[in-house]
Structures are given as C-alpha cells and as structure tokens.
Amino acid sequence: MTKDEEGPLKFQGYMPYPPKEGIDDWGLNAVEQASRDAGSTLTGWMRNHVEHFRRILVEHNAWRREDHDYYTLLRFLRARNYIYDKAVKMWLDTIEWRKEYDVDNILENFVFHEREQFLMAYPQGYHKTDKLGRPIYIQLLGKIDIGTLKQITTEERMIKFHIQEYERCGKVIMPICSKLQGRQIDQTFGIMDVKGVGMSHLSGEVKRLMSTLTKYDQDNYPEMLGRICIINAPFVFKAIWGLVKPLLNPRTLSKIQICQTNYQKDLLEWVAPENLPEWLGGTSKGTLLDDCGPWSDPEVLRRMEGSLPVACKALKRMATLSGMGEVVLQLEDGEGYHSPRSEASFVSISSSTAPSEPLLSHAGSGAWVPGSGPARSSLSAAEEAGVGDATPGEASSSVQQHGSMLTIAAINAHKQSSLLERLSSLEGLYGQQMQRLKGYMPANATARLQGRLAPPRTSGGGVLQRLEVLEEGMELLLRAQELSWQADEAKKRDRCCRGCVIC
Image 1: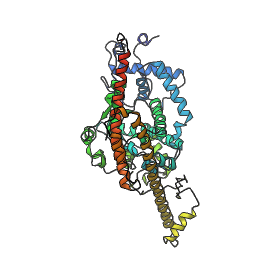
Image 2 (image 1 turned 30 degrees about the horizontal axis):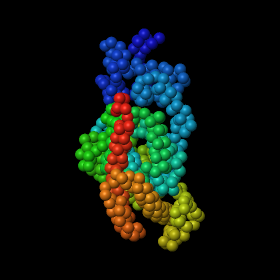
Image 3 (image 1 turned 30 degrees about the vertical axis):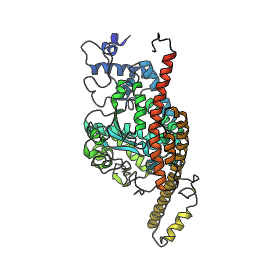
Image 4 (image 1 turned 60 degrees about the vertical axis):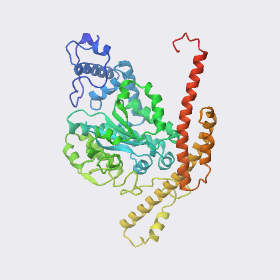
C-alpha cells in the first residue's frame, strides 16, 4: 500500500516539541509539494514522511524510541532529499559506524585528558548561543599547528574527541538550549576564523585529517549546521571560494556567509554582544577553553535536572571521569557534575587546571616534556625551588606547575622550528610555481621578490619579511594562474569546430 492509499500517518515515536508550521529553509520542490494530501499542512506532510521512514527502519530493526526521535529521523531524510532508499542506507551505515567507534558510550567512556593542550594547538569550541538560541561553535583554522598536535595526542584520539563533542552537542547542549527556548533547537551557528590560513594549512596531513572529520560529520551528523560566518578571509581563501561557490547548491550557499572586513557588524546581526567573545567584537569575557553557555551554568543545570536527566547524567559522568574543574552541581548520588571550565585562554601560556596524568611524550624536540622521562626531573626541580619542606599538596601543585611550564616551553620550541621548516618548504614550492607561470608574471616580479628574500633568515625580522614576501607572491601566483587558465580556454576554443554545445 502506498502512502497516499494508506492515508495520513501519525508519527509513533518521540517528538519533544511540535514541528514549526510553514515552509522551512529546506526549499521543497514541485514534486514533493504535489505529494501532500489535499488540505493538509506542510508540517503534516513532513510527519507522513518521517513516520513512513520510521516504519522502514523498524523493519530493519534499526530504530529505538528512546534514542531516535522525530527530529533525528527528519535530519537524515532531509540529507537525502526525502528519498527513502538513500536515507535508509545512510541511516544503516551510521548505525554500523556507531558500533565500530562505540559512539553510544563515548560520552561516558572516553576521557580526553589533553583537552586544554589540544585546544591551544587547534582552537575551537562552543561559546554561548545566538539570537535564535542555537549554540555557537567557533574555530580558528589559522592557528592549527599540526606538529604540536602530533606531540600532544594521536590522530585516533583527536577523532574520538571530535565525535564526543558532536555527541555532547546532540545529547546535552542542544536539549538544554531547546528547553530554554521551548522549541526544538537542532542546529548550530558557526564562526570560522580563517585569518592566517595559507598553503601550509593545506598540507597532506591537515587535508587528510580534515577530510576524515568532514566525512564523519556529513555522513553521521547531517543537517546540524544552521549558518556559518567566515571571518578574516585572506585573498587566497576568497580566490578558492570563488572557484568552489558555483559547485554548491543554493540551499548550502544560503548557510554560508563570507563576512566583510568589519566582520563584527555581520556577527552582531546574529549574536547579541553579551554572547560574542570580546576578541570577536562582543562583550563576553569567556574563552574557548571555558565552554561558556547554559550547558555549563550550575543554576540552569539544577533547574533542568528533573526534566533532562539524560543530559545531566551524561555531563556528570564525563566530569567524574575527567576530574576537570570544580563541583558545581550535586546530584542525588553525591558525585556531582564538574564543569570543564578553566580560567586559561586558548592564547594563554598557563592554565588553572592541571592534568592528573602525563600528557606529552618525547617527540624529538630535544626537550624533556611530561611523560618522556622519570618523574624525578620534576621532583628535582621542585626541590631546587624550595619545595622540599612543603606539604604534599603544595609540593604536588608546584610539580604540576613546573610540568606545565616545561610542556609550554617544548610546544613553543617546536612551533618555532616548525615555522622555519614550513617557511623553507613554501619558499621552495613558491619558486617552482614562479618558474612554471613565469610567462604570465609581471615583468621582473621574480627577480624583485627573490631580492627581498636575500637578507639573513635567522632573526625575527627576517621571518616576518619572508612571510610578507610569500603573501605578496601568492597574490601574483593566483593572478598568473587565472591568466594561464584563460589562455588554455582560448586555445581550446580555437581548436574546436565551433559547432558544439561546449563552445
């Protein structure tokens, strides 16, 4: 029996909030509009689709009422244009993927002790909500340091942390935001700062990791992005965006905003000043390490303990395992919920919380870091500092502080070495591309830029000059590449019969 023969279907699963009436931002086409029952609302039509999809999943033994609500099913349907076969395949693939990574238990079982060090090398995180009540997710792509990330943790643990954050968003952050708004919140507002993004950020390792994470996101957490604002876009990024933009569908494009140079004006259209960090033009003093938002507010959590027990339990379990922060919420069993907040900033060199276990291992930097050798190194340093007669608690605090200082010194040393290596690599690549496109470069451009690279490269001023030269050279290369493409297209047209649809 077809859906039309069966008549309107009522959703038989859990629907936390009524669907929003009217046409949403999906942009339904004429065929989908025509499939509605006469006189029914669009919301009723969608309900028919979601219930039909649910029944198919039940037949595959792939639906659980307690985990798969109306809006979860709707996101997968939308991701596949309401085509059941494709949506079912996507859903079943996700079920297998979740089993492989034990995703259902990742909130409770995975502890990312190296969180703060990781966020210093790849700044990202949630920070309050936008004017629509959606959680704000901020990334600073230009500050990614792949070399330091490799010292701090493994790729496997990075991926698990990424997955855990998505699970926390879906099972903890969004339910709390929804409760406060009194309606379904299942999308985020993103801010992506691409300041400083250049060719070094397009290395093989970075691209491979980003491709892996992006694939996991698209395949397993569809339709969770409501809007993203890209700020501080350099010339290179805008040039690449100009090539990619025609390939995207209108609905995807409507979610992406390349902000003007004065990006604060664009951001404040979506985010209230008190919810936007100071370093982005707002008045919020929190940082990306602080995890600011109602999901970390003890008073909000106390009020919601009875209505959102699953979210509160997940938060409490994560904090109990990680031991981060101070107890801010007492639950019935007395274990309490620990907020992951910290006074440290992602640009700070200190932290108010210290990990209980060594985080880094020796990675060829030439410096001792926690986890690379006997603990005696830290104890000796503590004794030399006059901690020998201190109480055990004071000595432990001094040892941890010393360990943090050594960790930071190792990271800074590696960053400096990594920067010089990347500069040399980029200069070599730049020279090759200059030769390849020399026929399209301005007269004497190659000699002039190479002359500016001639001074000694050991001082800080030399490094800054090299970066400025590379930035100028990149703009010239992009223009030369565009001229090269235009010349190639002209040659193709000259060789063509001029009677085909291509010309």
